[in-house]
Length: 283
Ligand code: HH2
Image (cartoon, rainbow, N blue to C red; front, side):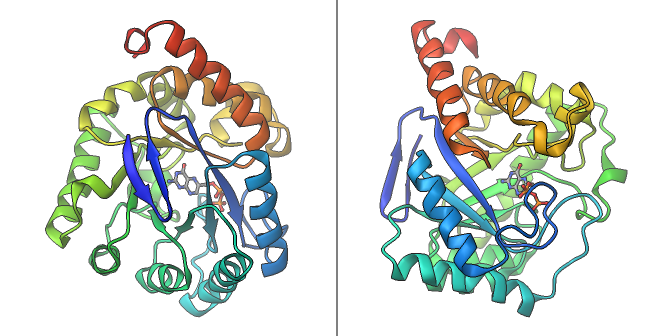
């Protein structure tokens, strides 16, 4: 990949680690821990020290059935954290994980560098906000909204349909004037996917490289790991690392994780194995 995100050029196969900071009361794995702006900023600094390449800051949970957050509340959760980090000289690019154009605009104005839109520009106002800011963007695949997505996990051809729907998101970006070179794609593990479908996406994620854009995957602590192992949310790091390894072997460039130090170790070893095997041979 070759993509500038804020002050940093992301070049080469990576793997690059996006550390998750949820300034929410109700995120599925860390809700309530980083709602206070000082705690969220401190967590971002901690993830940077662990070796994150960028951080992803969110103020609204997207877990299945999560209640929507009013825009004023989401702004209150997110913008002060970006301001605090930038005022303190935080060195890494900041991604804002939001479905709302107004939150994306305010976060970018406060010093965020990338928009992570789990709805893949379903909202034209979001496409305009990203285009006008000249920002790079993550287009994630999902169907519906977090409230409805679990009912929409029906596919005849999972990989084909996810790829076609990501292509449609890229077309929305192009129509809004967002250059293709600013796009990162994400298959959206757990979003309108059953646990079995998330596993199939992990097994075949390398096929999405045909879309020609860098790939981001977020397996961290997710439901499919609990489904396979019986582990509670707090106990899913080993399963997360197995999923990170699978992604890196398949050539995924960016991993979105809560546990950066551990994921970095798994990703670096998997990347070395991939390189030693000739890379492409593994997918
Ligand atoms: N997963 C979550 C949130 N945002 N963004 C991208 N691009 N890809 C993902 O897989 C992804 C995402 C869900 O995880 P988390 O942020 O920990 O939980 P919650 O949505 O409950 O805040």
